[in-house]
Figure 1 (cartoon, rainbow over the protein chains, first blue to last red):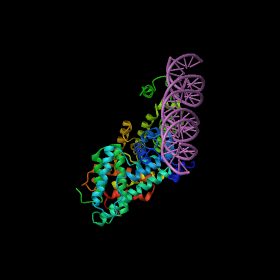
Figure 2: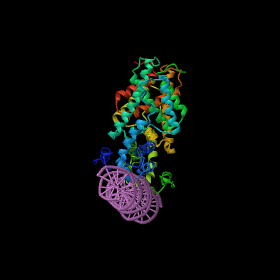
Figure 3: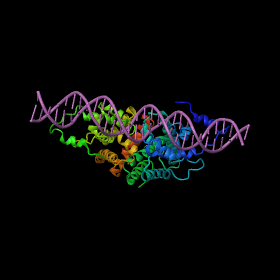
Figure 4: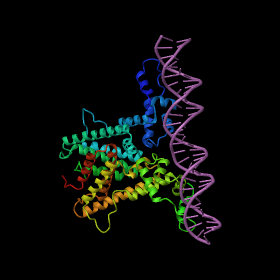
Length: 212
Length: 212
DNA sequence: TTTAATCTGTACCAAAAGGTACAGTTATGG
DNA sequence: CCATAACTGTACCTTTTGGTACAGATTAAA
């Protein structure tokens, strides 16, 4: 690992004698993320990435350092922008836990079937299996964040009586999260909407019993 | 795709003028499978594979044709030998559905935590996302086979009163299968046995209510 | 034992991988 | 308007990739 010219650049930006970068770093990162998202780390070549990012090699290595560093940034960017569930607003939890969770699964199934895309964190978890600790850290943080969002919904549901209070809310949140990823794997194997909806229904029937 | 010397070889073997192959094809395939299993398709180089298989390039291309063909065979081999659940014997279903499913999850969690391995079909599903139809076919067949095995256990459990009959057994089988893969993804992200066991418990509590 | 077919490993190959060097250009502070 | 540092893209580099060619060894039938 060499000393990073990128960080130096970040630090000294806007001091003196610094030209503005001509391309939009965030946009380039976003495009790179799309490539990694669909092809995985090994599956994405520098050629693929540079084409999607619409920049040359010089600019790339000055701005991002290496393919791996770009991937780490792309993974974080995914986690921050594409997780299907936002941290619930402080002010209000407008709709019921039931509706919130169903909406989550609906979005998930839509993405799985229509776009044929799988959460990048899940892909990364299987591609790296803990062999890269930086990747593992980002993935773990992202999945924990997802679990926390689901936990908040469940606590809310237990508070207003939608969800039985006997069950440990943390256990339920992890259970939902596991179903979330299970649906994506099965959907990747065979994109059949009915089956995935059936799984979501069955999963939710555990915590929201009053359902057909 | 060129005409395959391998099939010709298979056909004419034991006819005349054929030397026996000096290495054990099955053993080589098995070793290759282990490499693909842990590294994925793109992540496994020919060097990795040949080293693990302990054969030279000449023998390899004569016997297997190409990296991709080897992968397809390895994937099938995995499906046939490593799926954690055997097709239940005709003669007897010795233990209860409860125990069968719990044993399945125990094995799964053990593999996930101790060996840090994820079902190769699941990995393949995410790595290829349907971009290779031959891969998709093997994966789909394998997962369907897993679902069928689980279905048989569930039907058995519904027959002997362990599992409520109101629920569609097919839906339950798919639900269990989804949990199966969800556990592996979450275990790949963070190998915490307690959490995975909690997910398994919660999943099973839907169909086997009489549980602490 | 001869003969022929095919197995094995080595040497080789073109293409693609990720990454570096650098000439030319351009924005910025003085 | 000048000087200069940093940006841009091209050309180049080394290593690795998956795959082929082929010489020599080896087996099995006649």
